[in-house]
Image 1 (tube, rainbow, N blue to C red):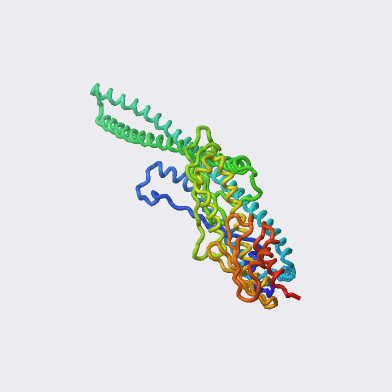
Image 2: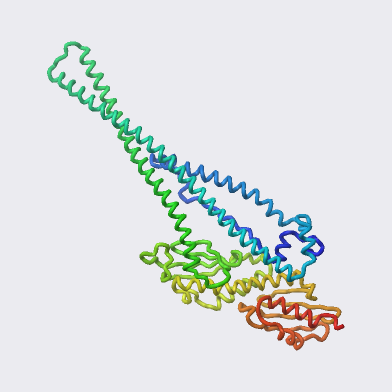
Amino acid sequence: QKFETGVITVGEFLTLLQVHVPIQKPRRSHLPANCAVSTPPTPEDLMYSQYIYRPKLRIYEEDCQALSQKIDELKVYVDMQDQLLVNVNRSLWEVMRTCSDEELQSFGAELNKMKSCFSKESKIMAHNEKATLYSKLLQSTQEQQEKLQSRMEKLDELIKEAESCLVSLETVRAFSAALFSNSFFPFPLALESVQAEEEELQSVLHLTWLVCLCRELSDLETQSEQMLAEMSQLQEEEKNCWEIVERYKVTVFFPPLFSFMEWEITEWSEQRAVFSFLYDSIELTVVFGPPIDGDVFGEDPSRKIVSLDFESLLDEENAPPSSRLVQRLIFQFIESWGCWQEKCPTLNYLPQVLHDVSSVVSRCKVLGEEIEFLERWGGKFNLLKVDINDTKVKLLFSASMAFAKFELTLSLAANYPSAPLPFTVRKQIGNIGEEEIAAVLSNVPVGYHYLRRTVSLIHQNLLQDPR
């Protein structure tokens, strides 16, 4: 009704076309526990801060500012979802309101294809931005390395000069000792000259001590240079490894076993892997056993799995009834399998587990979309009300032309829509009962959009004008 009258928003129009654009939740970093310790910094800490941490921090701050600017620019388009479609694109609304349900569904499918392409392009852009960030970090590290190298050369020159002074002062000291041993002081000023030379010698010794400290500082700078080089190498290796891991996971470890994937990898480490399903409302945590020798990525198919745990992240209080029904059916399937760790003892069984769960999630997600469609557009099928109780869906039909009003209750299961649904009928007005409904349902083949086709056929065969 909103769509036909022109008061539908852009977001509601996309939902009508079954084009879901979930906004990802931000994953904020947390400071380590020892960050706030107020101990005086050591010379090594100061070296790290000057040549490693501060240059990196400056580059990361510039990158964060650029990302914040992009986010501010994109917020305008996010807010556009709350505006009326007529105001945003009136010509589109005028064309689409004359389309049939099949044309709307086809248009929604094309929009989903475009959304998929845009998602892949955004991932490519994110990888390119990471590559740019790492190149800036590498360039900064090279500049700091050159500064340290220049400083080391100056320190080497200072050390050579100090050693030359030490040799000269040792000669003076030997001459002074010879004078004292022979008691040869022709003038009182000679003694004063020797004392002045000794004071100068003490000063030079102090300078030598400082030179030793500088030498230690130079060693620290060398270590810092080596660590910077290792860090750059590790960052490059990390980038290459992630590319290999992604390719390895998808093409080798997870073969093309299915034509759809309802899961996403949110974490993969040596100890565990975390997968999310159904718009991050279900989480699967897989804990691995000890790694096998020679397994570089920790993904040897024979590696043992210690546990598999499913967790619901759905907000039960604020979620719509259709979403709660979908969650119940999915976890009904999960609980029916019993102990998942027994069915998936090693890593090579994990693709099959993801396939089985994905198939159930996909079917139940379509069911939720069917219920949302009937809640919005049920009036077109003489459907007054859709009520959900646990795993049962109650459909209240009423048609004045057919002089009939009855309530149809369907019992759903996780295997929907692979089998006909058990049902009961409660008559309120008219003569339509279980026999009439059973005759209609016997002509509805199981499969995609089984619930919608059932409602449509009941409306077509039982609730139309008898004339």
